[in-house]
Structure formats: structure tokens, C-alpha cells
Length: 465
Image 1 (cartoon, rainbow, N blue to C red):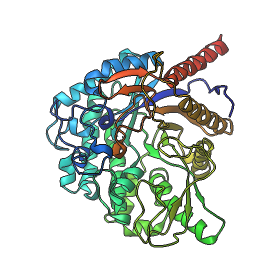
Image 2: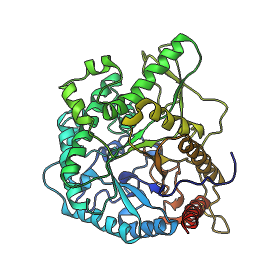
Image 3: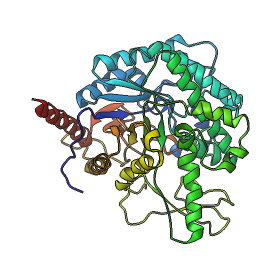
Image 4: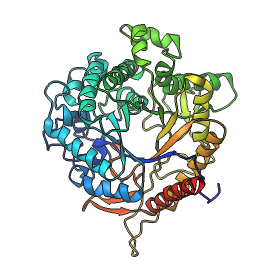
């Protein structure tokens, strides 16, 4: 694509994102209770190099420095997540005022810097006490999410610009409950769909709770991507359709249509599913899409699992098999770089849902490169990350030009951080973090993004004068 930066419509929102367990550290301070990720990280062999999020980037203590970086970057909004177990150490019951006070200070710091807070309530770090009671397999956890939403909404709602009850329920379901490579480490296969349903029910109940607390501008941050068949064969096409229904439409149709895309899916779920769907389908003010890469699916060729395209082989007997997407460059995480997939998925949403689709925000987009620390000139040269975001923004602008209502773009992430099971090697940040000293160094991509945002605003101002 061209090296020129695309120009977006006036009012387009520019943001950055991060998540509590990945950056906060201080897991045993301030009255915080343990989460499923604290427990998962104690298991031998599940996290690369046996690393944990116990220290992360020490954002808990260094948040003024991090907010100053966002202020100087010039972003409109910062998408953060609140640690459920920092607010409710047992997942429910007594509120930890010290935990809420931390988020009060962080929100105030952001507002003083001119950066709008965009808050995710559940970014995969369920309190361990709730997991001990059954976690997302227990229907009661959905109600506990709503209680938690009401508490946070009442305390922070006067200053928060955007709300997201859930982040990527598909990933938490697939990796955490079906394949076991993320917390809580369950290997339930299709049995994980019950956890998906309860997350979606929790989302709907949390939307209601936030609105009752006087909060508005509510959406979701949901991972989606195009799914393509490996060939034109009937078997591959059918396998791709099954996978597409499971990873995309199982998590969007209930919210935007009030139905499950496959009738047989609703039939295997427990509880009053039809009534639940009415709750899940609460009207949203916008819909957030996290995009990283498309998926190519073939029919299974044996009962030996997949080709390792996912973080772990699929169990035997799955009716689909992810295969490698060839012909594209890759990030250092091994993910193919397909900018047009971003244009394609937002267009798919527009075509599928029509007038039922609220405005879209890209709530995550980013790439991991194993950036070295600052060179002799004090620079972290990450041209590949600049190219990644520029090319994805060009693709997104094409979707907007084609009539899709996209309102904003959040870079994942503001800081290098703890990348879940991959530990600290995978670096997505615009800001380099030396994890031994916690020194922050803005990368070349940080300066590029700052210049891009400034140029967008300058163009808008010039057009109005």
C-alpha cells in the first residue's frame, strides 16, 4: 500500500488500549483478590518461560507516567479494563474501596489529560472465588457481572465516555474453556459453549445495570475476522461455514439479532435460552470489533487434530481444521498480516445486519514484533508496526468510503505488556517497556501515530476555517 497516511472524517476517534492483568501488576496490593490468571500462572508449563503478570508494567504505581504518554500522543480515548477482583476481591459481596479509589484516580488523571476513558469491565480476569463456584459454567456468574457493573458504573459513570461489559468472549471461550491454553485452563471442547452463553447473558445484564446506573454509550469489544474455505470442495466449504458460525455469529447474532445462528446450538444450551436471548439483545450504542487476522478452514483430514495454526491443536473429532494462510508477511507472533481482512469483516457486518448494526469502532488492532530496546540514538525503530497500522487504516478508510459506519480505531496496545500465555516476548506496544527497569521509551510507531492524529485534526480545522 501507499506510504501516505489516509485521512478520516471529522470526529473519527483515535485511541489506544490495554488490559488490567497485562499492565497493572500489584496483584497482591490494595486489597485485590486473586483472579483466574493469578492461579493459572502458577501451573508449570502453561506460560512461556514461567512468566506471570504479578509485576507486568507496574501501571498500578506508574499510571501518571503512562497517562502523560497518552496525553503527549494526542489520543482521544484510552480503552482500559477494570480488574474485577480489585473491586470485588471475592467476585461479589463487600466492595474493596481501595480498589475503586485506584480507578477513581486513574479516571481523573485521564480526564485532566484530555483523554476520554473507555472502560472494559471483564477482560478475561475472573475473580478466582467465582471460578471456584463454577465460573462461567455457573449461570450465577452472569448476575455477578451485572452487580459488578452497577458498582463500577455508579462510581465512575460520570466520567467514562464508553463502556464495554465484555472483551472477546470468543477467545475466552475457545482458549480458556475449550482448548485450555488460557485461564481457567479447561478443555471442554464444544461443552465450552455453555460458558459462552453465560458470558453473553452477563453482557446483557451488565448493559441493563449500567443504564440503570445512568451510564450511556455502551458497546462490546468482540473479536471477529473473515473465514474462508481452503478450497471450493463441498467438505471445505461446509467446514468453514461451521467454524464461521461458531467463532463469529455465535457471539454477534445473539447481541444484534436476539438469536443463535444455528438452531442446533441453542438446543444444546442449558437454561431458559429464549428468555436469555431477549436479555442478551439489549440495544447497543455501538459495536466494537477487534481484528487481527483472517482464518482459512478445511475439512478435517484425520482425527489427529489441527495443523497448529491455533495456539494448540484442536482435539480429535472437530468438524473443521484451520490451515495456514500462505502468501502474506507475518508478525513475529506468526500471525499473517492481511489489512484487507479488516475492510472485509466490517463490510460483512454491514451486509449481515443492515439497519440493526449500530456504528462500529475498531476496539483493537495491532501487531507484535520483538523490538529491541533503544539504540544508540535512543530510538526504538519499528517501521514494520508503522506499516501494519498504516495499511490497516487504508483498508478501514476504504470500508468507510464504501458506506460502512466506522467511528474510531484503538491501537493495541499503548505499552508492551504481559501477553497472556506468550509472556513478555510478544511486544504489541507503541511504547517499549524494559521489564527489568520498567523504563518506558516511545517507539517510532508512537511518534508516527502522534503525527497522524495531529495531521487529521489540522485537516479538520483547516476545512472549517
